[in-house]
Image (cartoon, rainbow, N blue to C red; front, side, top):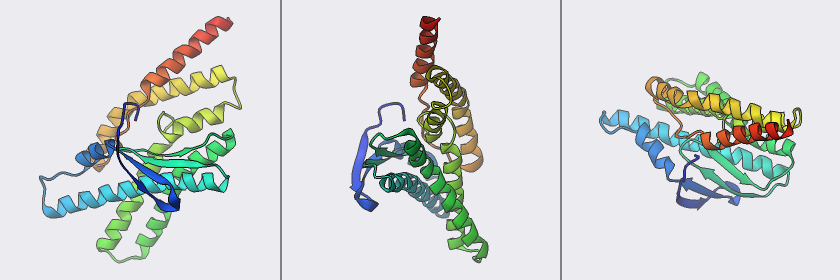
Amino acid sequence: MTLKDPTLFRLRGIGGWPVQIKVSILFLAAFLVHFNGTVADVLAEMVVLLLLFLALYLHGLGQALAARLYGVPVRQITLSGGISTCDAEPTQPSVQMTILAMGPLTNLTLWAVMTLIVSVLPQGGLAWALNAFAMVNLYLAALSLIPMRPLPGGALLQLSLSPALPQVTADRVVAITGLICALAWIPAMLISYMLLGLLLFVLPAVPALWRMLHLNRAMRLREG
């Protein structure tokens, strides 16, 4: 999130990495669980919410494991209302890209494995839960790759453009792309919520993107 998001609590996760849970998780829960339906409906919504939390954590864990593979120290994994980040030490851009990409790749792998398992299971509660977990992982992987800060896709776009383009041009492309995605983000989340009952409680980093665009413009004028 781009606004202040206080820490709700901390715990020790897999691999010994601290896991920081942000307050925005509660907002996500409030949107996804409704207490005006039947008991079965409420339980189903709570299961989906827990599966989304698990998918978010595994997203960050995948990044942390990739960082460990490259010998990059990881301070913590942070879970907020729709995004999971691995707080790793700065490293070379190619390694940063691999670490960032491992989050969506972990979710896509879980989607593929769960879908395969569901295809051979008889219909029932277990098949429903695994199918829901598969869909949640696919949803999270797809949205996390949108090229907009603070999503991983925004950082991946910047890291991929920087070696190929002058820094001023790369920053301009990143800023404009991010702002376009930001304009569509809230309507997209509303549609997602109405059609799928899912959303990510993530606020686009519009102020940072706007500053990047105007700083870029000022640099171009100075160079001209």
